[in-house]
Length: 114
Ligand code: DGP
Image (cartoon, rainbow, N blue to C red; front, top):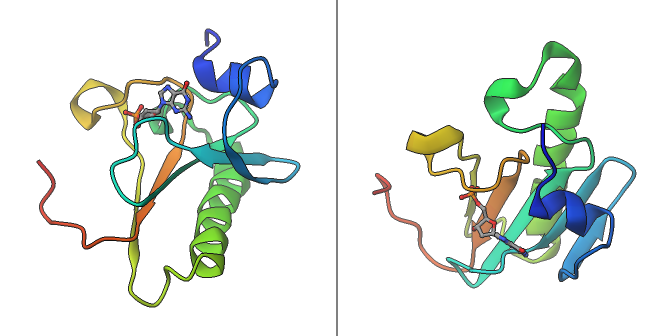
């Protein structure tokens, strides 16, 4: 896959408001927040889309979700709730082709999405 803006953030080539990091995952605030809390959890390994993830990425995908859940709990979002979203390709609304989990919280979410 080609490089993306998230690759540049992971390599610290461009700034971001980083809120969590471990060996496999980086999380930073979305530039265009859609909720009071809007954080993106990205694998340091460059996987373009959820569709491009392979069986061998299962543990990494689990780590992404668990990191988002732990952060939401730390931020006091878990009891009232929050939303996690993975957009995939054009119809999914994906604009940055480095797999990421959106964590949205701090307001009531509507369903179904538009
Ligand atoms: P998606 O549409 O699922 O591909 O979401 C991409 C998100 O990435 C979108 O909500 C805006 C955010 N974004 C795009 N460029 C940047 C950036 O340079 N920095 C940060 N922090 N977020 C970005």
